[in-house]
Amino acid sequence: MSTLLHIDSSVSPTSESRAFAGRFATAWTENHPGGTVTYRDLAANPPSHLGWDGVSASVTPADARSPEQAAAWAEREELIAELEAADALLLSVPMYNWSITSTLKAWIDAVIVVDRTVSLSGGPSVLDGKPVTVITARGGAYGPGTPQEGNDHQEPYLRHVLTALGATDINFIHVELTLAAVNPALADLIPLAEQSRDAAEKAVAARAAA
Image 1: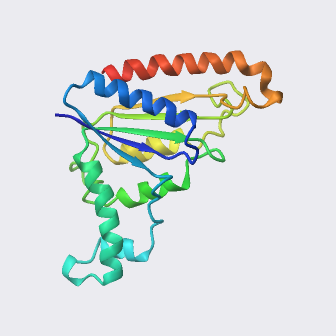
Image 2: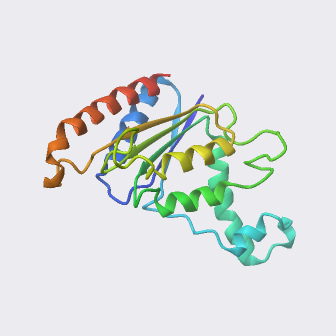
């Protein structure tokens, strides 16, 4: 039985990233009979930003940790255990200020532990052999040839992090120009926004069936 770990990070309950990730999770469940989805909403339940207690706890034996270290590690352990138990990972990621949400960054900081989830010596890492799907939503367009090319600090960063965690099957699905329908200055781009949505819907269906 397969388990999909589905992580949302948008602060908006009606965001495009949430909507497309929800479609993916539904289609994945339909295509994986008996599979289960573990869901975590980083906006509703934001992880703590990594502090010294959480960092030092990772190199302190359990029986020697202070109460503050033990509490910080317990939070990290819960997030790490979810990732370890998953057979596939789904991230929904809005672009905020050309990058990712602070809550997703906090989640990343929590789950990266050298010699546990990340190997620096060629050993196993937590996402080895696990497919990862990243659904992004961007108000503008950041693909090759666009004026914003080079300002995408979302996909390159996440691709590096996920690769460090052992992933080799990483698929990005971008929903772009989400502001075209609400910003009069972008009205001429509505047809391109609709094309992006159509392409994303097809990509979601294909990836969820894999």
